[in-house]
Amino acid sequence: MKTYRWEIIPMEGESTFILTSADSVLVAAQTFEENYGNHISIYAIRKAAEIIEFEEAV
Image (cartoon, helix red, strand yellow):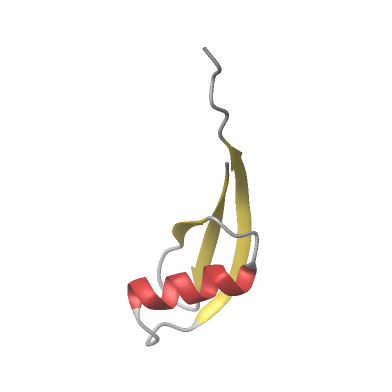
C-alpha cells in the first residue's frame, strides 16, 4: 500500500502536512480544503514523501 505525504505551504502562516492515498496534487488540495476550509490561500503544494508499506508473509 502506498501513501503520499504532501506539504501545503500557505501564503501566510506555517506549512501543514497531509496524507493521501492518491498520487495527485488535486486530491491533496481537496483534502486540505475539506480539513481546513477554503479561507486559506495556498502558495504551494509539494510532495514530501511516498510511503510504501509492506505486509510480512508468515
